[in-house]
Picture 1: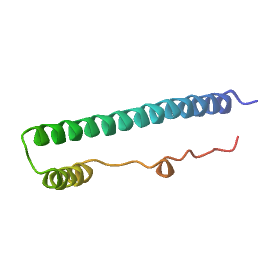
Picture 2: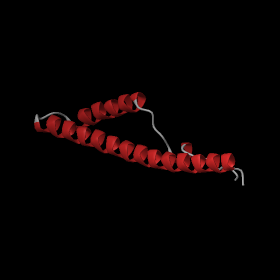
Picture 3: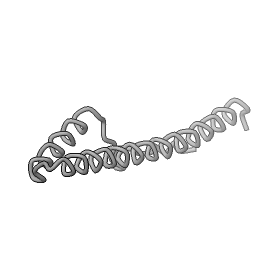
Picture 4: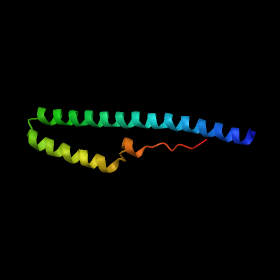
Length: 88
């Protein structure tokens, strides 16, 4: 078999593996980001209710904060991350 073709196929295999690793890490980071944002929201609600604030008003503010955060961040769905198979 052609050595050049073998090298290209090996490079493709390596790049696919790296892509899978990067996508896995991206999913982990997005999950961590979501968790930290949720913790921030919980801390904010607790601090507002401890001050004797109105719970419903606090929840409205939290909803606004959540919408602002979603506007700032790119959200990746699993459907958006697809692997393209290259026929060997």
